[in-house]
Amino acid sequence: MKLIILDHYFQASEWAAKYIRNRIIQFNPGPDKYFTLGLPTGSTPLGCYKKLIEYYKNGDLSFKYVKTFNMDEYVDNTHILNGNAADLQAECDAFEKKIKAAGGIELFVGGIGPDGHIAFNEPGSSLVSRTRVKTLAMDTILANARFFDGDLTKVPTMALTVGVGTVMDAREVMILITGAHKAFALYKAIEEGVNHMWTVSAFQQHPRTVFVCDEDATLELKVKTVKYFKGLMLVHNKLVDPLYSIKEKEIEKSQSSKKPYSD
Ligand code: PGA
Image 1 (spheres, helix red, strand yellow):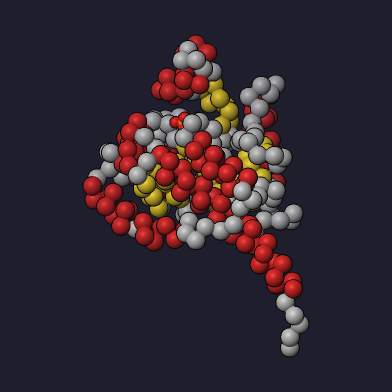
Image 2 (cartoon, rainbow, N blue to C red):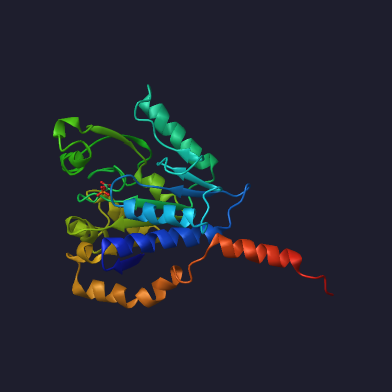
């Protein structure tokens, strides 16, 4: 597991966006090889999405050969659960099949709730769960009322969510955690054992997880933990520096095709 600690929300969002950009470009997606990206809802990823949009507009990143599951932010190739489907479980099963048909998820980006839920896998969710209907915890209803005019009665009480097992199947998982209100959840996620009451802790057992957080989110961690991971930032920053651009890739391609024949 990697823990990336940046000063503030903006820097954490930018680091995450750069990481996603480099992963997509290095994967070298094409018509026969799509990059499959799992994306979260919620407010945490907004800063990261803004950066990704900026990279796209500047021509540094393309989503042409990227398939997303969960969000419908980018052009085609998107899959989102339909919470109004007549048969909700059939909708969930079909979603799992679509992920499988796409070759599985290369990078699953997730956010967490203050109660440590990943996607809507509320406390007590099975750590091997798949996509299904979940009843939302009161903590989540309270936290999300801000998206519904602050009116608790308007917040849906149920949601469709990918399971912990669905996210665990991704080849890599990146979890964004910012703000002091998530500090206890981050502590439970990385300093305590795997526990279904803090479903994000399951990712201790994923072979490739990167947590990206800001200083505020580290408030409940041991000074020793924070120092240890900050000491690794020199190495971890190499994941986003150099920052790749598809413009350079295109130039490289055109130059290699122009190379004179030599033997
Ligand atoms: P937030 O929600 O990003 O708006 O804090 C995250 C979540 O509840 O999973």
